[in-house]
Each structure stands twice: as C-alpha cells, then as structure tokens.
Length: 334
Image 1: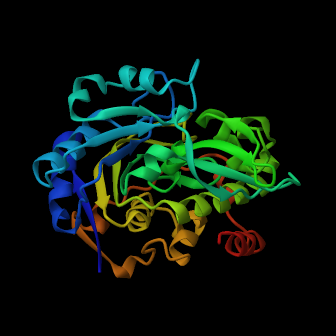
Image 2 (image 1 turned 45 degrees about the vertical axis):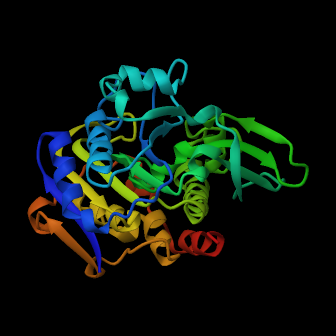
C-alpha cells in the first residue's frame, strides 16, 4: 500500500525532515543527480505563492545526510514578474542562504530534450511542447509545490508544479520552434496558443481552456513523474489562488514517493471532492499513481484531525467538470 506522510508543525525545515523520515524506507535514490523542483512562480518576494526555501533545504539535507546523495540541482522556470527571472526569484524569496546545498538551474533557458503532443482548442497545427533537458537527464525528480488553490482546476499541487519544466513549443511537422522560454511556452498548455489565461474570457477559462490544461498536464505527467513529492503546506493560499488569494495557516507537510497519492491526500485535507479535481483524478485513472484513498496508508497525523476546508477560487464553482468535459479529458490524455 502506498504511504503518504502528513506531519503537523510550524517550522518548515523541521516538519519536512520529520515527514521524510516517516517514509525514508520508501525513498530509493539513484547515483545520478537529484533535481529539486520548487514552485517559484514569480520574481518578487511572495511567500504565499512560492515554496518556502526551508522546505527545499530540508529535502536536500535529508537526501545528503540520510540517502548519501552526491549531487543536487535546484531547478525552476519562473513565469511571472517584471521581468520573470528564476535566479532573482531564488534570491528574493530567501534561497541564497541555502545555496551551498545545490546547483541552481534556470530551466527557462534550458534546451528542450523530450517532446509530447500538445492538445489545442482551435490551432490547426500539430504542436509539441518540450521538457527541459536538465529534468530529462536526472532520473530522480522531487516536486516541491506550494499548497494553494487554482481558478479552474481547484488546487495546484505536485502534478501541476511540473509546468515549470516546459521550455519550448514547436510545429511537429516542420520542427520549427514557435515559442521559447517557460513564460511563453506554458501559455500553450491552456489551449489557445500564446494567449495566457488572463487574456481569455471567464467563459473560455472555465470551459475549453480548463479542459485543455487538464489534458496537457496529464500528457506531461505521462512523460515525467516525480520520484518524490513534498508539498509545502505550512503557510498556504486559499481563495483566488494561485496568485491572488489570501493566507491560510495550515501548518502541514505532505510527502510521498507517489505524487498522485500525495495530491489526493492534499485534496481531502482541503475539503474538496477528488472528483472535482479531475486532472489529478484522471492521472490516477491513467495509471500515474494512486488516487483511491482506501489504498493509501497515511502515516503521521490522522486525516480526520487535519482536514481544513479551503475557500476556493471564485470561478471554481462554475469550473467543475461536466460529464462531457470529463469524457473529452479521458479520451485525450494518452
């Protein structure tokens, strides 16, 4: 049975270490470098939006001290800011004091290494989206997201955190690159070419764009699956996340070697019906991880004692998947 550690605490470093120790026997580290992938969404300092650096430091220290990992890379492609800048985001959000633990990499300018077909709503071209070479070259990926709400998908957790690994879009027939760098590339995940969600109407966002994003996230996760997920749930964002919400003190760290199981447990903790978080549920149906709570062993805090319902994004009630949308999602995720 899949194990998910859930530990309560206010100190992000110590709480993360405790969670990792609970599942330590499940964590198998290869000799190759390990990549830590936090959520550094924007350049500016914003603790409610970005992964706490202490969480990443604790993961690094556990891997170095307990698992004898020889090389750690901290990698991200920041997509928001004036301008978006991964290294500045690390500096502004408190990562500098811990830099002796890892080699920092800006994925935004990384060359693409692996491509997967992009689902588009109207674009007649066959498009492919490329995953950063750094990610594909390291067999052990740790997804370390910030626990927060999302406008149309409900929650953004360890699966959606993989968005920051995308670096290019190309025409599948001509091989011509039509978008480069993470901030431009990720827009295509929403189904309307280079248009970002803030350039789409609410009707498009809660409808076809939402379905496209869920499909493309599943296609991405078919190519890369984190070997370990560590969800930063100490200080989280509810309401109009992933960038405009409000603070919630959840004081939890969630960790598992099954990233879908970790996301599923987080969904229950947030008081949301997993059937309403369809992109995670369908990833489980697609064999990418365990999505059935009765097949997950929770170690640490009892689930009933830590459930703390999140206020959802104001659009989410209207964005829940309909049966036809679920059918479209399921028929396009392979």
